[in-house]
Image (tube, rainbow, N blue to C red; front, side, top):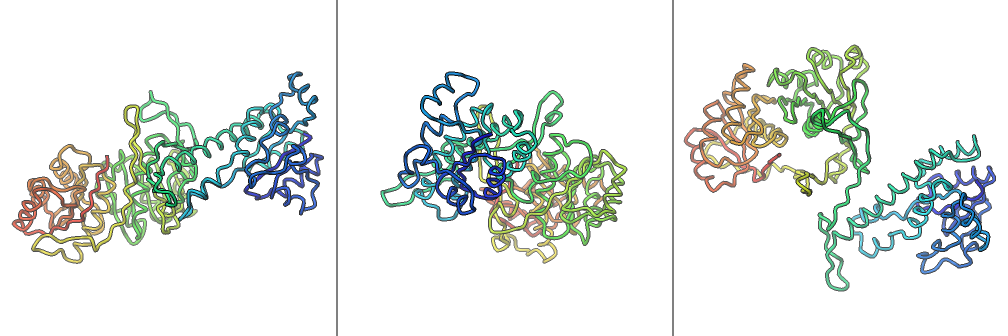
Amino acid sequence: MTTALISVSDKTGIVEFAQQLNTLGVKLLSTGGTARLLADAGLPVTEVAEVTGFPEMLDGRVKTLHPRVHGGLLARRDVPAHMAALQEHGIDTIELLVVNLYPFEATVAKPGCTLEDAIENIDIGGPAMVRSAAKNWNDVAVLTDASQYAQVLAELKADGKVSRATRFKLSVDAFNRISQYDGAISDYLSSLTLGEEGQQPVQSPFPGQSNGRFVKIQDLRYGENSHQQAAFYRDLHPAPGSLATAKQLQGKELSYNNIADADAAWECVKSFDVPACVIVKHANPCGVAVGASPAEAYGKAFKTDPTSAFGGIIAFNRPLDKAGAELVARQFVEVLIAPGFTDEARAVFASKANARLLHIDLPPGGATAWEQGLNLMDAKRVGSGLLLQTADNRDFDPADLKVVTKLQPSEAQMQDLLFAWKVAKFVKSNAIVFCGGGMTLGVGAGQMSRIDSARIASIKAENASLTLQGSAVASDAFFPFRDGLDVVVDAGAACVIQPGGSVRDDEVIAAADERGIAMVFTGTRHFRH
């Protein structure tokens, strides 16, 4: 290790890293602001311009695009002709490249970012050097993130070189970073439609080319079925409080189905502001309730459908204490999720080695969907294609509710309706949800007919010995005919919440008035397929 070239936009830890390299006798080359920073720290540093014989040009757009740089990075040390060419042209080898790129992603994420700002933050020389060094990984170590500094220093101090395995990993990381960077540029630029000269482009949420950027968390034993292979990936920058940020505290390795169901449970439970519990089976909530404590919420949620709750995924939006843990431990649970577990709760499950405990911090909240731990986009694969849509994150405003019947819901009924509507958003369509007293009473999901969903929900309540008399019902989409409304009223519903929007709304409203129930329209549909 004789020479390191350092050119970084993010200067976190770079002075300390360079000081350690200098102590190890490594010659330092650098560019622009990085060179000045190192020099100001008292380090002996040579500017790249001295090596190339050319000053930085065009406001820094051209500074490292030169054979004396790329020759030093790309020359194979085991090929005599390469080394002879370097000697002929007076080019020194470079064994270590430290580069992180202009902050393009951060720039375009800022409100009010202009096309000009974005263009000026497209790095050219940096990616070119990174690719050269990564290609020649057998001879060059390339660092693209400050988190890599410590390991490289440790190996240099111990062995005087960076190991072959580490160089290869750094090369893979470097190519991944270039892919991420180019993908971000492609996504942004292809989402723009240019207007007249002097006008800022119009940006679409759907780029002309979609470049997914995901990082593998783990390989899975198999997919939905044992003959399928699978792996779990996260967003490059996962939202705080999302499933991808979970920490597994105990239990067997998560399966594909565990992860899918855990996401459904966590997304539903974190939507509540008060202590809540959600039990999910096969991607559908089979029991949802709120209470004064996790234990109370769980007890109510379990009552909805004790049969389906067996082997389910259970999620809480409050730290789980001993009382709640002891109740949950009475049944077989695949995955248990909470934003914390007391030591006493952990002790309850210590003997249940197969129970998977996931700790997920609640999102901090904020103005953006990302700060609220929400996905910005939903994706679904189809034959040789991809469906993309903005996620169903529309804020619900009670002021948008419209009572369409002669009978007004009472305050207590309105609370039950809002609870039922929140749950229906997370139930597969067609969805019918009976609720009362802050808990689900019957859930009908995923049927081809809304009437069948309503009948199944009432059967679930009957099987759990729960009465539906005076209950509130949510339907994720409108009733196309009055027959669906009649089924839920016959089962005992006293009020209904639904989007409205059917050509037969008047017929359904008249039926509600005839049956003496209150009905509320939301104006928003919640299909979930």
